Length: 226
Image (cartoon, rainbow, N blue to C red):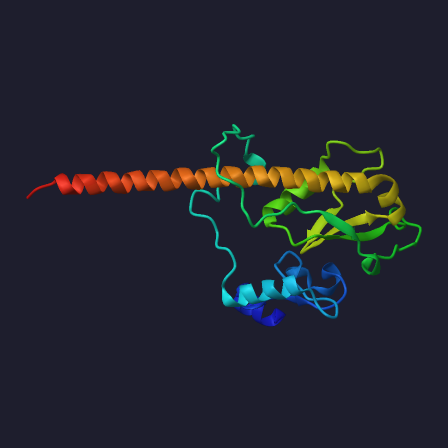
C-alpha cells in the first residue's frame, strides 16, 4: 500500500483500519494524520463498522455548499441569539469523555532524561467527533478558561474517538488534568454548536438569496416579449 500511494499519489484508494494497538504506534508516519476506522476489540465497535460501510457506500454526509465552508471554527463571533435562528444539526450530540482507556496507557522511557517519566494517557470519547470539534477541543485544552500550575498545553491530540494526552501521568490526570479535560470538552461542544448554528444561518441566507434570484429572473423572462 505504501509503495502504491507514493507512486500514484492516490491516497483516497485505501481506508486504513486499526485492529490493535494505538493508531500513532500502529500506523506509518505518512498515515498518522489521515482518516481511519477503529475496529479494535472482539466484537469491534458497531458504530465504527457502520462508519466504514457508509464510507465504502458513499453515504457519508457531503460537504456544505460553496461559501459556507469558508466559515472557520475559530473565526466566528457569538450569534445575535434571534429566536428564529435555524436549529443546530440534529446529528450532533454533546461529546463527553467516558474515561481512561487503561489497556492503552503508554510506558515511560525511564532513562533519566527530561520528560522520561511521562507517558501517553488515552481517553475514550462518547463518539468520533467532527473535525471542527477536534480543532476547538485542542484549542480549548491549549488555552483553557481555568487551569492549574501543572497544566501542559500542547500535549492533547484526538485520534478517532480517542483523546490522548501525550506527555503526562495518570497521577497528574487525577490531580490536575481531569477537570481541564472536562472543561475543554464542554467548551468545544458549546463553540461547535454555535459554529453549526452560524453555518446553518449562512446556508439559509444563501438559499433565500438564490430563491429570490430565481424568482426575479423568471419574472423578467416573462416580461420580455419578442
